[in-house]
Figure (cartoon, rainbow, N blue to C red):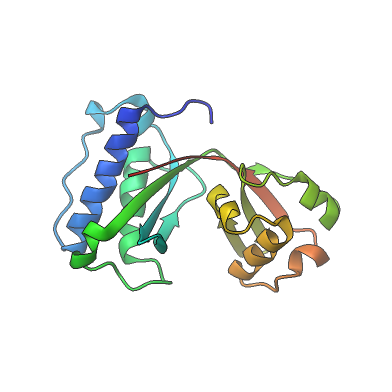
Length: 189
């Protein structure tokens, strides 16, 4: 990551995420963001994922791989989406909000990873460092670098990522896929 966020910028983004979730879950309007009062990092285009956990279990995770709006707006949008729109979970309800823990991942731009065999792909992966994007035609899926903590074996990591993409777990062994890597600056409450 070219330049990390300051502690104050991280705290601000976490507070924006929490306030946005609280307001959205309670169906209240969001206050406007005044970009003129923010630091250059917060108003520069940024890509983020917001992950919600409850008692250590995943409760929602939504984000984007490419920067298309100011980082602060990206975090706000994905915090609300993680709480209300992650198809894997029912929407967060008001009584849950206090139990939700928020983690924000600020992403670097994805970079193509070229390889010519499954063995070479395994050898080029950097567990715990890189997030991985797999793409096969119109199908695409990603795992953040934090997923390596739960799936430390590169072969299992790729197999699960193929499943997430809606493909057979062994697809990465049988076909050269489009693979991209990225890193994150991760912080949480």
